[in-house]
Amino acid sequence: MSRITLTRTSLTQGVWQAVLTVHDKQDAKPEISVTHLDKPLDGVTVTDDRDTQGEWSLRVPIPAETISDGVQTYLVKDAGSGEKLASFAILAGDALDDDIRAEIDLLRAELDMLKRAFRRHCLETM
Image (tube, rainbow, N blue to C red; front, side, top):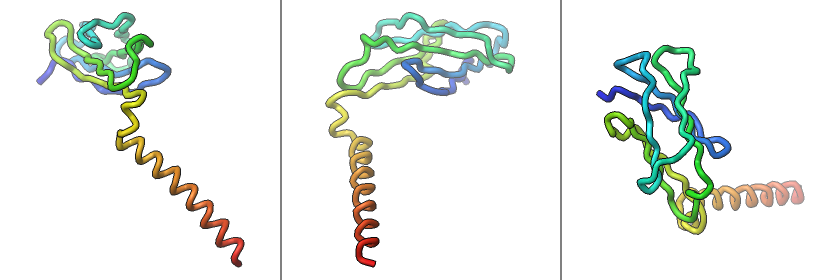
């Protein structure tokens, strides 16, 4: 079992956030590294602002220069052991044209349009 468990909480306003739970040394602040294309990100913070002992808040600001067309993957590691704790990806640009999620969003929009047209038709024929 890993000495650190990471639980993702959110990605808001360009900051990816998670909760770290340390299983062995409850008082020891975990050392975390986050990389993109094997380059470490600056501004990664680990703070003890949680109510539960052994839990730490992780905040990873996503630098604007790392966001571009395609899939950008970020790796979160325990800096002490080098163990991968998590990864997250940001998808942007033309790569999304063929993405199934984009297709589903288009289908939802078309379905909403058809529902409105059908309801309007039903009201007009009564």
